[in-house]
Image 1 (tube, rainbow, N blue to C red):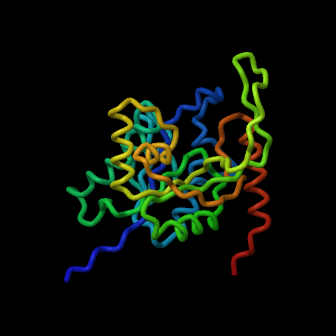
Image 2: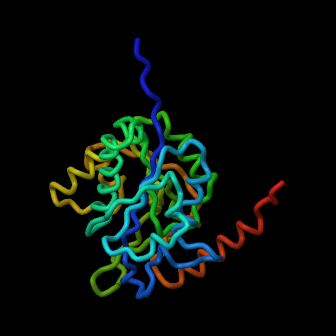
Image 3: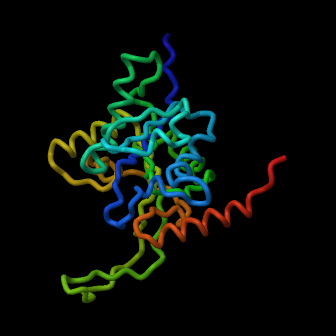
Length: 250
């Protein structure tokens, strides 16, 4: 009897954003925080793992920063070119994992492998959250995502920014990354969304479009995504506090 190959872990990081919305001259993934770029911080929890099969970082077509990054020399990282929206960039990363089959033996993702998709602009992912996500989902048939339960009172507004109603926060979660799904299932879901011109803002939404129910794994709310200029300062505070509280190396 032939033994089935164990599922491996792959990572796709869409990093094709231009940061136009925050008016930055340097794309936010390449902005420095405490001496490292946001992208270096974002990838650090993954690269410190021994069970990682490989990473695809998806770059903008005109990226002028990657070649100067220390990450470019990391042997487990390959790059792909992104598209107009996040969904196109993630799909490009998945396609890169599939196409590697013809070039490098055993260096392509199989349908049952796991893919973790993480935002390039999330530099504050705790390694413990990543480990918990993997441990809780490794035997799940659907997969899931890190998320934080909503703790704020939520308001629904009208077009004039007037409160229409107060929305109960019970059972509401804030989606984080990474999001972890089977390679074949995620690729199918994203291809279907693109083919049907369905706008999906994260991988879970694409999986939900197949009628499936991803699992929510509680994560640290400080795993923030940098979207405004003030978020850089907040991320620095979080990272500085963690660096100070980390145990000294033996």
